[in-house]
Image (cartoon, rainbow, N blue to C red; front, side, top):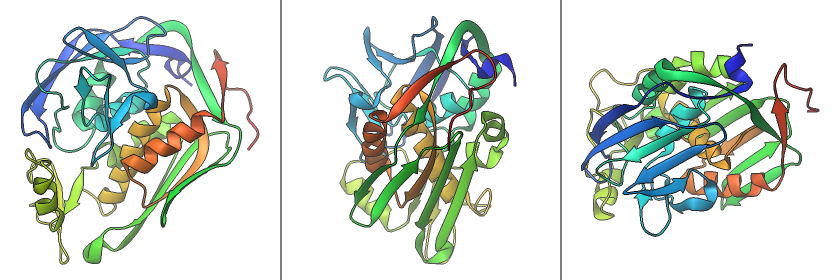
Length: 291
């Protein structure tokens, strides 16, 4: 494996990404800054910093948002997933305008490309974790369950309406497999056509369009060209879960199964999983972890 898998990484230079916030509809410019070893993922606005950690989550309504009561960073799950996918450990992410991250094309693609292009290795060893016990959280018939495993494996199963119906998708690590999985990285956010009015009533989805969101109907896909691949919606649910998992503040191995989970359940799972994560330091090939 490459050194970057076992030692911390930041970015080599600052860069800015801009676009529309899918819920706010406002222009958003986000500036990525290099960070020192052991900084972690930090969000910055107007001089206030908030660590990307599950304890700082303030909202999970159709996205994941963190804050400290003064500043807020909304819809950060795609940025967090891209950071995980690009193997970035230390970065400061400055919101220059809106409170919301730009949605771009609805996937993690644009974030990932720039992060991977600018990745820079550091000297400090990377910390990893592994789940030591079975963890399960649920909400009515929806649930997430995880078992100890020597690598990360994520399966999402769900029902996606009368057209796509039942879908299931599994991602298995190591990270080399993950970053080669372009279907996962490029999977766009989606909604059902009947949900659009509900989102508008909640004051959400103001920046949503067919340019950044897949719209499902009972008979097909509204977007020109349809889906990027047949399992795009369920792949995106795994992408969202990866982003939310990174709010644990550490990469950890486990065999995770999500049935109809969403951001609220993801966050509940991470909070519970943290209680059972043991940390180890990798400076060479990973130590063997019992399954």
